[in-house]
Image (tube, rainbow, N blue to C red; front, side, top):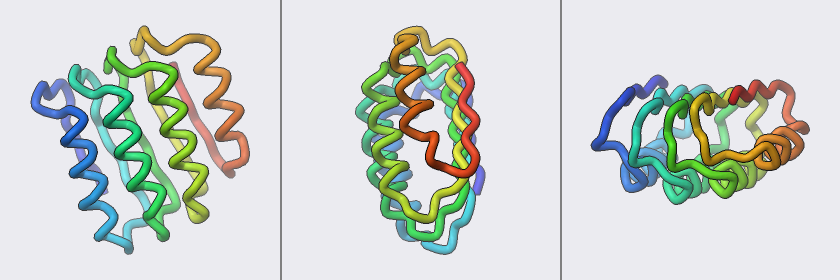
Length: 126
C-alpha cells in the first residue's frame, strides 16, 4: 500500500492516528509506504500514534516512512517509532527518511540505529 501526502498542510497527528487505525483493519498488508515529506504538522505525537498501530499489524513485513522536512519531529518521535516497530514480530524491513528534520540530534540518530539493528534490513537516512 502506498499513501502519499507530500507537502500537505492538512496532514498532522490526528491524520496519522486515523491512518494507523484504518491500517490495522487491513491485516493482509505485507508492505506499506508513506510519503509524508514536508508535512509541517506532523509531530512526535503523530509518530507515536502511528507506531502503536503498526505494532498491531501482525502480517506486516516491510514499512517505508518518508518524513523529510517534517521539522517538528524530534528524538522523542524516533524513540516512539523504534518502540512500536520492535513490538511487531513480523516486521523485517524498515526504511526511514528524515532529511531536513533539524530537531533530531546526533544522539537521536545513533539511538534509533541501535534500537532497530535487530531487524533483517534497516535503511535510515538523515
